[in-house]
Amino acid sequence: MRDMLISDTCVILDFCVINQLALLRRLDLRIVIPEDLLVDELSDWEKSIRSLGFALDSLSGNEMQKFFLPLMSQYQNSGLSYYDVLVLTLAKVRRTTLLTGDLRLRKAAVEQQVSLKGTIFLLEQLVIQKVLSVEASLELLEKMQKAGSRLPWSLAREMVLKAAKNNKA
Image (cartoon, rainbow, N blue to C red; front, top):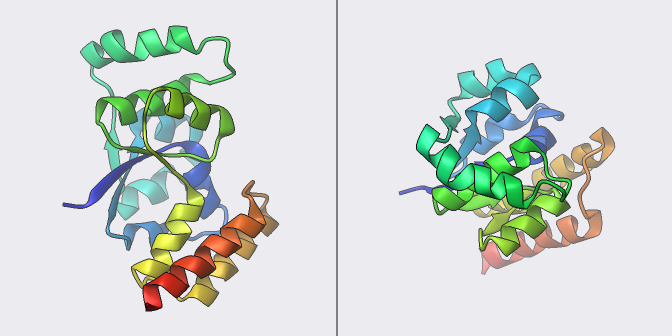
């Protein structure tokens, strides 16, 4: 069974802005996007995301009452948005990994004991799963930087190179 990851906006946007979202569908991962987030925050890419067949998910009314509202109350003054708490809740309730690069959301996920990954992990996976060469993955990283993505660039490059080296061993 493919590992499921719940994604927030920033990770998806890192690939959307360089027109490489389709690469994520080639990974042996099940990347899930919350339906509300898709419609409200990713509306410019909604058609592409739907046509590529990304999994969508939403909380039931019961899950909203039991899990989302308490977390929303807990984080109301933390700077987390409705959508941040939504993806956090989905990852927690589904007992899966949260894909995010947002520092506040990452902090909340650690507090909630939700496992975390981000764009760098996906770039590594593109190399490890032989979807892209290390050179092509580094080119994507460069394109993301030019497009304004906010990643720790030297660490990202180091991690992609390390993934390639470990994959050859």
